[in-house]
Amino acid sequence: AQSVTQLDSQVPVFEEAPVELRCNYSSSVSVYLFWYVQYPNQGLQLLLKYLSGSTLVKGINGFEAEFNKSQTSFHLRKPSVHISDTAEYFCAATFNNDMRFGAGTRLTVKP
Amino acid sequence: NAGVMQNPRHLVRRRGQEARLRCSPMKGHSHVYWYRQLPEEGLKFMVYLQKENIIDESGMPKERFSAEFPKEGPSILRIQQVVRGDSAAYFCASSPRTSVGNEQFFGPGTRLTVL
Image 1 (cartoon, each protein chain N blue to C red):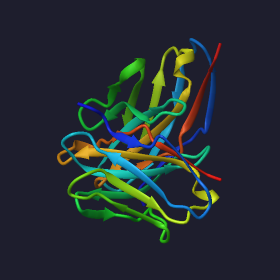
Image 2: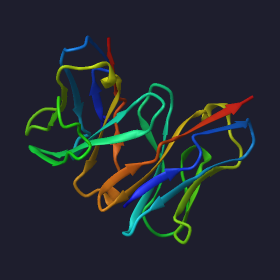
Image 3: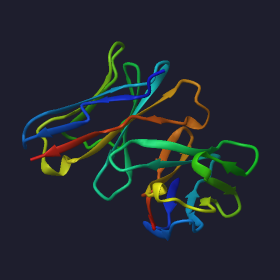
């Protein structure tokens, strides 16, 4: 069965520190991968996506993610976080046109 | 080009009343998806619609919930006889017919509170 797993429900980090939010997927078919961010009381905004080509994908707000087919992962990274990055982050994958979301990771950036 | 519109943004209902949530997709988008987000939980797929057709409703509760996307007008998610457990944020997303990877564009959500 196809699924998306976000390994960390909460990630606290200090401002200007690097961060990695982990995402793994399980699928027997080709996938497309996405990261969305949700700020408090708002909808989801696309951060970045992997459709094909280079496995390192750069998104908005300084985020990037790397598609690793052998490890079935699509971890999100940022070298230096800001207070304003505090939000909920969702990894999503499309399997045969069905999009499924992970449970989300709450990133809290502390001063 | 306006984004996905949802209204109302906040909706309060008493137990047993009906809730109607509206979603206007982005211009040119013919695919609509509804998701539910319970407090402290992720997004759960509910239903996928195209104009006048329900394509996948595998995530919809079997009773009290229904969705439509008429030829004209917004998509409607309808919840009859609401209960406290229906309190959640309901998000609509849309995509164009030829969306590679099925990238979806999300609305701001409707936050339903059942008293």
